[in-house]
Length: 98
Image (cartoon, rainbow, N blue to C red; front, side, top):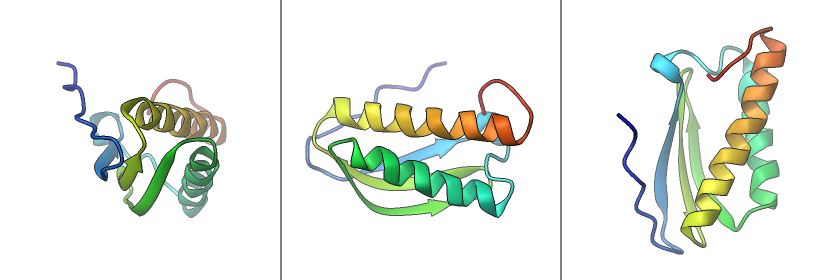
């Protein structure tokens, strides 16, 4: 079943969880964690979102983020995740979603 649409109130913080498929590890090494922080920073610089806090675990991460509107949050998450999955797949010699 698909995830229900996220309720986004403009300029209000949202707690977002980004989880690996089947709860698999998506951050296996320290360089993976460094890369996701770089991807977050890069994507924030191109979006109208403000990051307040984040936590990176081996198989997921939490973000406390304030988007200016619903579209900005969706664009941020899609761009950030897309950048990271391309890196992860290249480094770990694999294809597909994580």
